[in-house]
Amino acid sequence: NWRRVLVGTCDAGAGEACHNLGVIYEFGEGVPADVKDAGFYYELACDKGTVEGCNHLGGVLMTQASAPEAQVEARRLFQQACDGGSLGGCTRLGVMALQAQGGPMDRALAREALTTACTGGDGQGCDQLGILSLRPPKGQLPDPKAAARYFSQACSAGFEPGFQARTDGSQAA
Image (cartoon, rainbow, N blue to C red; front, side, top):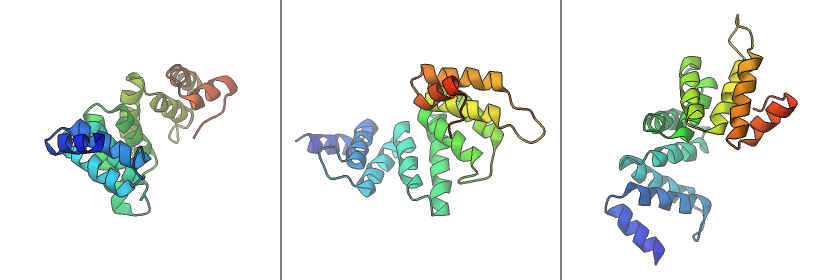
């Protein structure tokens, strides 16, 4: 059966197979959804160098966000995923840095991570840069032109809140 093949491939060292098992268990594709099993396979994938495993493991940990140590570990995993080229990991890292989740607020880290994500084509990263452009630190003025560019990029990447922000001026959160 397909699951046995994936487990064997994962056990043999293929991180992508471990990641696929994580997705299967997280979303209950052909098996009952089980976030614990999903986390187990995402961790294996991450340990084997599959950056999306790190990204998704961080996401699973964020479902346990009431535990401060889970947030710290999620932020570390998103950093690892971002450093490895995961655009989603960069977006999640940027959002956590802006919201002071799992560590101190760090606007420079947030801007860097979100810029990496947006430049790579992640619409949510572009959307978050648009929001950041409209909500600058104290003493700086909002930059609606930059925000409009980022929202347009989000829209072009298929991220619907970016489209809404571009067409009606709202600020998606």
